[in-house]
Amino acid sequence: MFKNPFSQLLETTIENTEGNSLYNKDLAPTKISERTWNTYNIAALWIGMSVCIPTYMLASGLIAGGMNWWQALLTIALGNLIVLIPMVLNAHSGTKYGIPFPVLARASFGTLGSNVPALLRAIVACGWFGIQTWIGGQAFNSLIILLLPEWAIFSLGPAIGFMLFWGMNVYFIVKGMDSIRWLEAFGAPFLLLVSIGLLIWAYTNAGGFGPMFNQPSKFKTAGEFWRFFIPALTGMVGFWATLSLNIPDFTRFAKSQRTQIIGQAIGLPPTMALFSFIGVAVTSSTVIIFGEAIWDPVALLSKFDSPVLIGISLVSLILATLTTNIAANVVSPANDFSNLYPAKINFVRGGLITAVIGIVMMPWKLLSDYSAYIFGWLIGYSSFLGPIAGILICDYFIIRKRMLNVKALYARNEDYEYKNGFNVKAIIALVAGVIVALIGLIIPALSFMYDYAWFVGFAVSFVVYWVVMRRR
Image 1 (cartoon, rainbow, N blue to C red):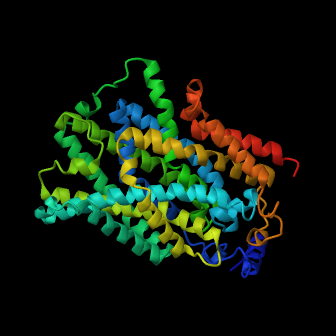
Image 2: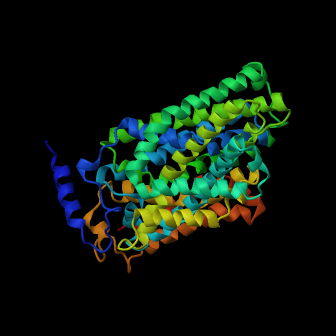
Image 3: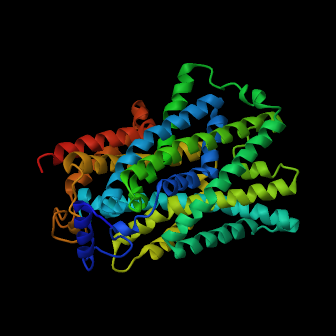
């Protein structure tokens, strides 16, 4: 098979990285022959990750917070179009060089300094893993109650459901990346069909779309709306701010840049908009049907009369949560923890560390209500991830103009060693972005800085990094 000169050079370079101190097979650049993900695989990845309970809660949480249906849908669509930009940009290096996120971070933060952004990203992923596992566990517990009604009186039922679902996740962690591609490709079409079925239920029981969408906004003035909209938009960006960093973990398996760009463009925004629409419509219908906005789909299912419908819905929720959890919340932290000690921590061990920390972070507290979920969790961690994205994009596209020394990324005392493995300038830029993004929590007059946490952090770190690095 014909290979262009760049591909031939890259293949030789990849072979020469083996045996270096920062190398292991899970962090190694993917060979050209290993890049088998086509446009459908990339799109299915996003469909599988987007069609999940947290996405549903995202949409329904905005309704519960006071938005009407089109305000909520517009906020989500705009947030996903915005986050698609850094998603595609950060994906470029993965497809071109075959490297995962923590290895890419070595170029800007240093061979050892890369552990700083990697661990920040990993901790967020552990929190998300816990959230998804808790949600899936509750659906699992509800399914057991449906089959064995006596189970409802067992006080440890929710905990057992949680651990059973946790075990399902661990199974796919041990099976590795190939199982993830299979899981996403299998689950994506099925999940969309079930979601449409849920929308049909809402349409039928609420008397059509008219009554659902006639629910007015609770905001009395434009000022009230904007005070809610701005942090809500930041939360929407923050929802996928995690994947906008570690998207190279997946696109390093893509066949081409065209594959990753088109796959992401048709997989992420349309699916998020469609499933968010379902969340908005169904939550709006609950106001008509039950007299209150029910934003938790598991709680909603408990009000259904048909055991068959409940069972099918619960199984779909479990599958949806499983596909998202493995792809979005295991791959990245597994690689990030592996980056800490490449010689001893592989993908499986990193994934198991993620699974344990996800329990320790007590996810049930993060899901206490929609306010804690959107304005506490999503915006809070975006103040750390926005600055990291700004530094990565500035370094790769502006400072290095998309040129990396792959072999040096896997060795000490070469191009990316900086000072004892740390690029202090990148750390300064990161700290500057985080401080400015979080200052609104300390100074009430600057609260808008926190409301725009991801955007502010991204811009500040991007500019600071460019200023301190442009002479390098």
